[in-house]
Amino acid sequence: MRDLVLAGPRLRRLGLLTLLLAVLTLSGCANFVSQARMGPGQKLDPWERWNRKVFAFNEEVDKAVLKPVATAYRDVVPGPLRQGADNFFNNVADGWSAVNLFLQGRWRAGIQDTARFAFNTMLGFGGVLDIAGEAGLEHHYEDFGKTLGRWGFKTGAYIVWPIFGPGSVRDTIAMPLDRLATPPMVFNDGKTQFSIFALQAVNSRANYLRASQMLEEIALDKYTFIRDAYLTKRGSIGEEDEDEDLKPAPPAERVSPPQVGP
Image 1 (cartoon, one colour):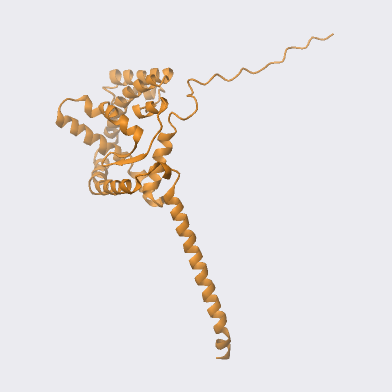
Image 2 (tube, helix red, strand yellow; image 1 turned 135 degrees about the vertical axis):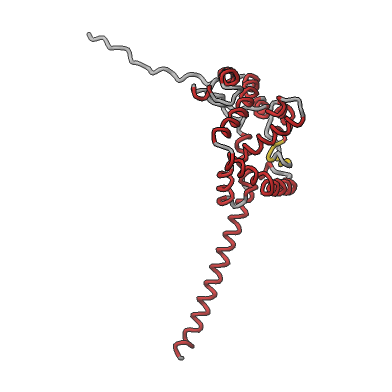
């Protein structure tokens, strides 16, 4: 009993110390989460309150409609057919990419994407087969938003659009022209356009099912993670160093002249 009485003050001090450590730990965690929410793209997100609301709406649409349909599509449609759909959509993108590469003055890459588009359209059944890819010709994935960046237009403020997702002022200006170059616009019939648009959206979402699941598990703030990733990718376009096509060739190795003996 005497030992318990003597231990009372020490137990109280230990309890206070434990409480203090818990408060400091929680404070540190809160500060860490706050910093994570800020992110490097915070300065380009003046409309964050509005953007977060639209982002939440898009997330609900994805959970209720797009993700379940994409999951069923992945489970039911055979892999080769899904790959064929991927190739078709990429082939249309290659044609528009070639146009933008020429507008950017990147002639070698433009010729390469033109060759991709021509080979796959003529020999790959309209792009369903990626003949050019098997020959070693790679995609470049350029659009008019990136072309504006090459011309000196800054990314501008970050914007989240309903259904379409993340964007920026610059990419929003380019959006109408970029949309005209998408696969649905190849067709004149409205029903066909909608069907192709739906297939493209579902096929694209199916490709990112695993990545989105990983993002759900690791991201402290999904909105901030997606915003910063988007701005990092798009903001560097046009503000980077010269393209590899324009870089000078490395200097030739200097060879010392032979010494002539006396």
